[in-house]
Image 1: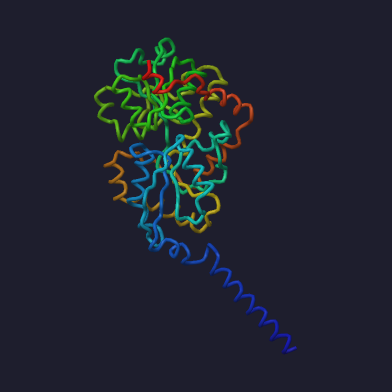
Image 2: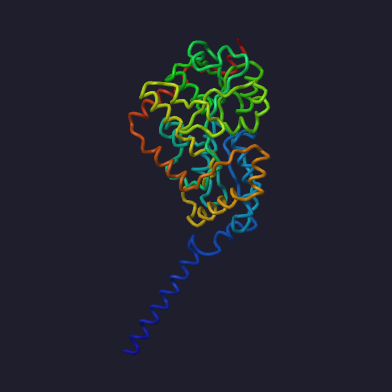
Length: 358
């Protein structure tokens, strides 16, 4: 009996020791996250060039989040522009190691790209782990002073030239949706290298309309807005931005119920906004540590002062809340997806080179 009792104790001790080894080597082990980041670089990957809202929030995060992450890594920003963010998204979600040493700030439209243009989506956005949101990303439509039309009704009667980046980018697809669904007479000219250059095009009179995240207008074009050189006439989102309470949402300028549904759906990525994300497979303890660091950062007085200095909108949400929005987008029915696919078509869009030849 003594031998049996001793054997049972030995088995229990061995099992406990084994469990201790497992716990120590598991992703949730104490100290693992600190060991991961101590003395290392944490990269924030962006899919757009410097100068826009992605860069604005990426640089803001790089300046502040590191102090709240266990191990206090050095945080750097890496730009990989191309395809309206698709190049960086495909690289990050397919090629970058899921070790937590690279996080990303990629388009809020990744789910829409996957559902509406699956051939262009070389990823599965349904399993992205969101860390936290800086602000929603209502796209704003600006028309230049002196344009042939400056009201919604005028835009239904008079052709306006829209400056856009790539034909598959939101800066082209959102105006195309207004053309195809809401009857606005838009002529798309694409090929501008980034939203900043597209905005310069309307200021020079090369084009009449440009659309980009409201945060980009607020941080980079406040002087032009104040001077009346450009005016925000529409916004895309599920709720009006607090800064733009009198500017209608896309779905508010049409009466047809189906048109409203389509315009609302193509705008439904706005609540995801400018959010930091981790790719699927990053250990849960790393994701939780990054989420905790994000929440501490956005409440820090120094961070908020820096955001105000940079004119960055801060209207945060947790990673869990953003993931819930992402899941809802993937639950849309097939008939609405089909209608939205037709709505975002940029068929017939011109290019800068074609315009220059004329």
